[in-house]
Image (cartoon, rainbow, N blue to C red; front, side, top):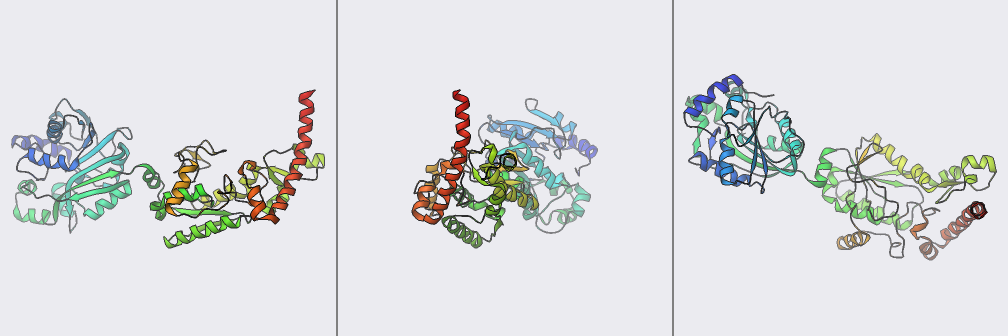
Length: 469
């Protein structure tokens, strides 16, 4: 919602220009317009070669003076007034549009400037969201405008078609839109043009008595901040108790207040994994977070669907047993993981309204899904903060931060199994550790593996016979 009366502004533009004013700011921080713009440019500090979108550009004088000092800068001048755009320097790109909804692509600007322009909006949050959309990650939002210390906007809107809000309110809206504040300053005013424009000292006191000309410099969120902002209040971390999961969780420690941490307990975990989970749960509690536990019954699942295995003979499936009468029932490892881990986890997260799912997944792992951070799967956007890490990177991070880690890694296990008695994932290297540290469970494990191998060998003998015939 734009507060300005466009015909009135257009009529006033020629009179203002005739008076010698070309920088349409209510207060100057220098004795001349050039000195004032120099103060703004120093505070703005745009990166080399930046594309600057000047929203509510007036007649482009601020852009002209900035470009004179910094020829590397590129400008797009935006204004709802065709009269004012006609006075803008012709060598700048110009756009006749309302900055509440600009026909500009996402992420094209390095800097978005509002210099005594945002005050003409009746919907600051909408304008700030639009600025975030147009800025590149880490882009600069620069506001030079009025800050209200007390009172309301009723008279200011009636007399000047403008709004001013407290610094706290503006900064809160900017944070909601996706920005963090670099600084806010109120330089010494050298020339109060707004009072001169109003003329009537009594009215000027009423309108401007609680107003302070202020500069704000913000930066748009980058990296993980953008994902957390995009899914504010709907972020989940899937914590397994493994070293990759632990490293990823603590690498995001600054974001803990913005996420919920979920853990699936299948009822068949290694005691060593439980100890890690207990320590992490304690750390979360000290940070004011609760570990969300999802309990499943993997042993009950095995009774129905069979033991998991990396190779499943058809005769040993639920349907295959009805045909073959094979005594041992087996299921694929991914079927077992889905039934006892992923499906219950995702169902709970969906119930909780989660839309961003974070996992400690690395690209150099075996069986790592091909998803990348930002992809969407099963209704969740995924974020993998350690996707590019190596196992050595993870070990170093854990050691440097003194994080809990299960001892079976040191013994050669590649991953942390959620289920101690799992008969799949043959590449994990758990058997040697179990033999030494959990001999009773190891005996059961080896017997089950022997039974599985017997069934697989039968099918393999048939396969060999066919291929050798």
